[in-house]
Image (cartoon, rainbow, N blue to C red; front, top):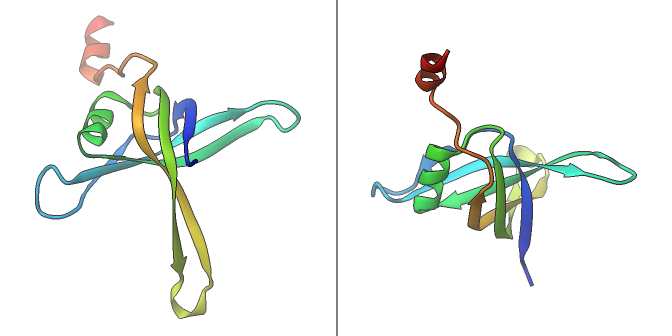
Length: 115
């Protein structure tokens, strides 16, 4: 079974990319920071990808530091570098569901107006 569940904070804003010529053909990529506890405390960073409207909404309502819960699955892709530079496997989590666990970041104008 290929099922991933994580709760963490976005390490950067969602970057939207378009594929194809239609406006709704979009995906977003970012990193989720996960706290590691126990003997080897620290932070792990996992690449995540979101598709379509989920990606657009995440880019609009989430920012760096936003806390999210995600459910998804691993997706790996094999690659070879040009000029004999070796090969490897690129793995990311494709998000099937996302839950926003912190309030959306406020626009800069709203922050300045309250001061």
